[in-house]
Image 1 (tube, helix red, strand yellow):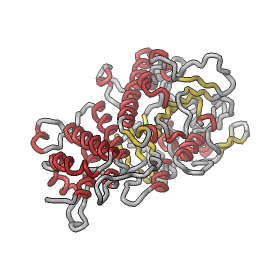
Image 2: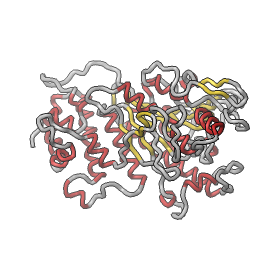
Image 3: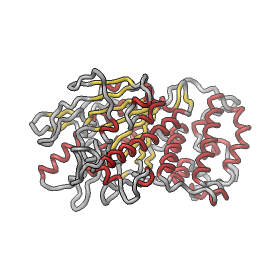
Length: 478
């Protein structure tokens, strides 16, 4: 089968490179600002406070405090943040926000005397919606509104581009899969769990002349020759591209080859190379590379990834244990679900945090390897590392967040921030809270060029009757 050279580039996910071609030889791309991208890395089970927290020498305990990260060694970073040391100038680590909307939701369900009160489920439903969960009689609650990733996807969608991609594992905190991303109330966004399927999806190409030919069938028919064709065509295409176009073509050619080999989808080699490693570590890294491919080719500007919960044996713990059990035992004086504290559990949850941090660091490295404009792809991306719980023991009043990347200069990075817990809780007898995480979502909307001053709930009422406002961005992030 023969396809036009532009079609070949698009079939490889290189539409952005094809736009650099001109009819007169070398392309002269004019100056333009690279687009902003955003990726949500969703980690189940919360962060262990002692693993994430950093001291702020001289910082007030009753007010906002911050500490620069640029001059710190890796050993001076907390265990959770240590893997991010090479990118510390482009990291904002945030302590002290609150899932106040989830707390308000829990208070409302308690007052009503019926509904799903499970902290995991409400946390998953709330974290990207910022609003009350959809309660469903006889089963667990689910997302009660469109999530921020899908709101951005709807607003930023461009012709010929994916509005968003949602990847990762089906998170099962209890006995039902609980998605993080929603198109609307109770409408989970379709999620791709297999890296090979995601790869085929990104490189899919259906020629207009043959609408009945499935994308999968066409890719299979091209699979044995398409990369060899790229190698031959490169010598012909290179003279027609400027320096930026040639660099992008080389990078994408190499990345596509790397992914194909890793996914075992090149002809006879598939008998020798597994489709993807059963170890979660390899699968996560393949998805991180796919995110780089999708962003670098400008195939989409919004990605949501739900990270798996690995088997304990993958991190060197007994195979008959689970991180769900360790989570409940991990905080001295603050366990949950009737468990008692176990120092091994605290160490296990610290190691789990570090495992996720290593994957986030790998993603940052992937994005930073793509030259774009006067910087890199990482400079034009915001990576948002979130969890549905503040702590592994089901708390919501003290959350931990990492923002990484340049965000086209929107955020003032290279800092560890601590917000004071000086607001009353919607639930009587519960600890004081910091600013509502809805305000973080507002900041993310604004980082992506939107003018909203609220997302999800606009406020709630504390147990003592005080009004709680969720409006406005977190000014300290800029």
